[in-house]
Image 1 (cartoon, rainbow, N blue to C red):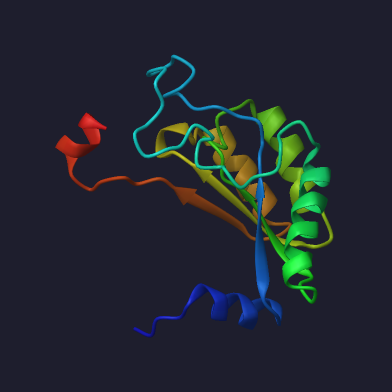
Image 2: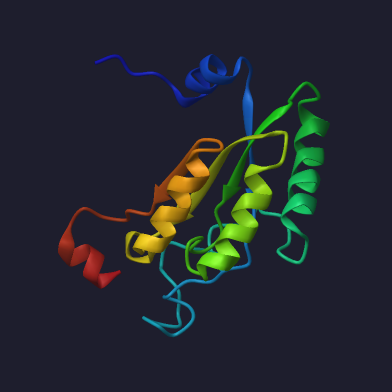
Length: 157
């Protein structure tokens, strides 16, 4: 099997370098809101691993534009982007809310991929159906946090 670097794959697929924009959907996590715990996870920062995301007080479009400005300042020729929902658990919300923010991101003309970081226990059927629907518009990537393959370690965490 031949391995290909993600950067090469994206250049092949989209004809140029693709840059990732950290977007904050304003969600939380079951390890922070009291459903499972309130202390968060040992591997997440206070920002839920979204330390480089734009403020959740901005609309998704405003976040995309703000993040693009930062990248274009360093790489003026960039034109294609991944809308990356990274902070906290990005499927931990109502399907209506997820539809609203993900659709806004995926419909942005400069976004070529929607990427969503989440947890395996936060992907109910209705969310999977939404992601499948959005995947018909543009590619949707789901990043599942896996902190350990060892059950005792996972339970401890």
